[in-house]
Image (tube, rainbow, N blue to C red; front, side, top):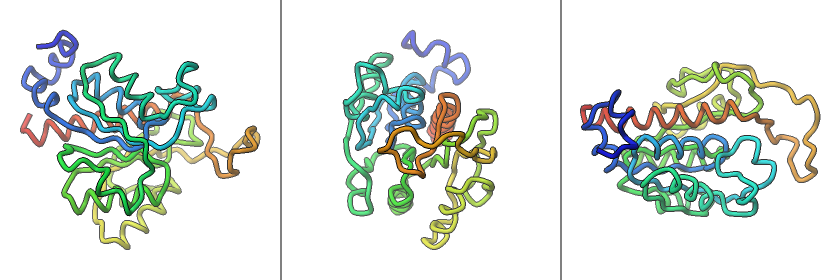
Length: 238
């Protein structure tokens, strides 16, 4: 057993190490939510990650994104999170700098993935991932809105059709129902989104750009990772 797995094994058992080592998780979106999911999965012992994100690190990401460091500003986020993961684990990471669409979702989702994590913030991309995973029979866990919130204790896990309050979840329920998707495990917040105290300081930001703090997106990401590990172990009767 690897020394890095000692503390984990005390809770999950020795058998879990091999199961997680053989697992392959695909994480779409490596920002405030997805980056923390990648880190937690790697530290938990997941052997393979495919990380997909088309954006580059900006200084405004430093307040909440694991891949954002002064030394990574300007770097593709997928490559930056790959570097972070490889510093703390033996996880094998494939970094893909692409934006997910209905046309390329089938080619971007690894067909041997144990679980897919949707941490993207674009409805069209989310729907493409969820629909394609349903077709392939691959479990997917989806993040709802982590922005404009301050309370990390309000994060919950439930089915999309049992969510309330979250505006993104409301849109997703409507769109998934129209596509015949009857169930989806999501991480969401029961906190009402906060109004902005000041407008976005960066003129390049859209008016709809959400505000964000370090301690809510990270909880979303860690919760998604926990659910992924639980699902992988349950599939293997552990």
